Length: 292
Image 1 (cartoon, one colour):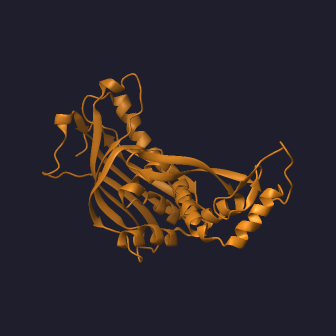
Image 2: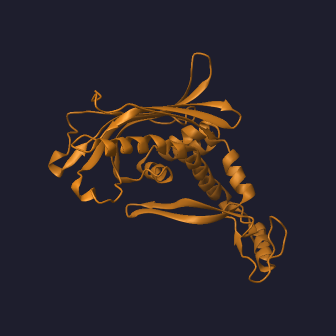
């Protein structure tokens, strides 16, 4: 299936985090979560559709997903952009967590070209279908470090220069380096929705701290023109600029596009998001949403 002229690429490295965060960061079971993941992983899509869900996640196995997808990646503008045809992908994608013969857990993410007679190439629209096969295997190698191994190729087809096609393939493989941060961003948004039920008394206390110009993290008073205060988006505490950790998160996904905003958080809530086990978040945000 692979053209012998197309190189096979191999990538390996280590990222900080937990194995389940790597798998949860890769998980995308509907078009909204797919666009969310592609934004965080800096692999933006111009158009995308989930054509068929073969296996969905369950409470017992919340990271399991097997589907047929079609998508077109967003193209970066350059001098040659008008001269190059658009590329699309028709793939079968698999995500999940499993154990090997020794009982060691591994995460996997597979992307492989899918062909079906009812889904022909869109040559009449001047769209070239790419041939792709990527496989990522991840495993926990220490308390807070995961090793990821990737292997595969991307054949853009057509008459694209070899150097450009190689760069596209390498870019696709290296995007997985952002997968742990994607999980943390998902968990941070989940914490925001969980904490929106903060009672009126707590909100009143935070408002008093804002009025008194006092940071609830370092307990220092902020003087005029020496700094600013903001409310943590999770716990609602009033924190100064030195104690604020900004995070760029996706706050809205619509047909018109994706809206990202830089939101303020305190250190304690950012740490809580990082250390929160993703399994419950996956069940709440993926499994139960699909069942409803």
